Length: 415
Image 1 (cartoon, rainbow, N blue to C red):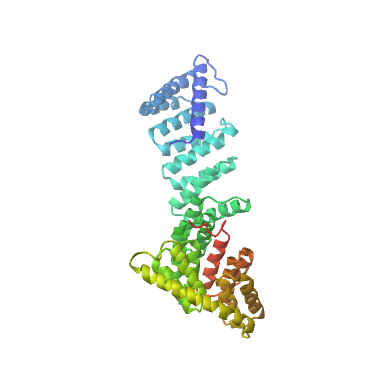
Image 2: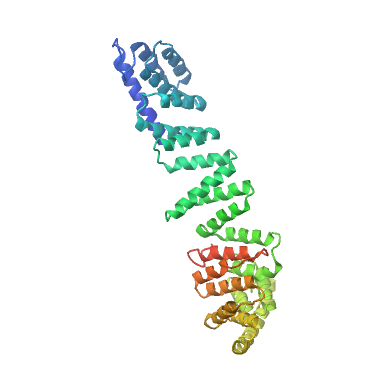
């Protein structure tokens, strides 16, 4: 279907050509913007045939008009306009584009009409899947002063559909960054096309840029589940980070199976964090995932045991807080306190340990410090801590995803 600009242009062009031809039929010498009678007669017949949707007859009448010798620029202009209209009606896009190109080259075309005609030509080429022509036409449209952003979108989509994934990705990235620089949120189809372009050319860094923005601007449980599953399946991802990955799954609402809740609680217990294990089990019950079916009794037993262990551990943590001398113990004590919500006691210990240095695993420390800051509602500090995480074991990628999550409108943005 034609877009509105070319529809309006064709209607106005045909009316003008018909009026000029009619006025010129009885005049021996045509004005600069009219046609002679010998051209007017077949031209009007062609336009009547177009109205009747008799496109073969229209083409035959146009050949008669073209056969008239010594045509003026305006006569040629009117014939090319009419041929373009007939070709569009007949579905002959190559001929339509050729005719409109001739119109564009004719000095009789008013400058203010160039952009509207080119916009229609872009859509004609795109709908005909002639993607190689879309780009040059879109560039000509821009040079003619065209401002419709939809033309640029068609140009980029044509790059993608024409297998120019590198060009599409570069254009989409530029478009997204321009929107962000202007304080506007890029639209979801643009981000998805950028991500798909990166996948098509196997450009992992570029895909990460696009995927992170999708997670930030249009979060969903599915997107988060896919991102975290991809991270866990990457070569070199450390099994030591399983609990950290589950923490982000819990935060993003993608921890949905009873086995996952139980596995996270078990890992927390093994890490010496019974308080966190209790919180995970409580969350599983609150979500209606635990306490159901054949495992209900076992789930309740585990919850009761975790509740008791957490209460006992809290007492020992407060004692350890007062006597910790080893810097690593100071940090782990602070993190354990933070996992049970005692950020006012835990964060100072963690901050002091990081400031002192000499921790066994600085990457893990900054990852956990960020988690604690985020839990305390201190997002900017959390992001700063996560930015400091480095390493090839998956911790840096996990910290990056935490940053994306932290920049969302709220902790429950995934849905």
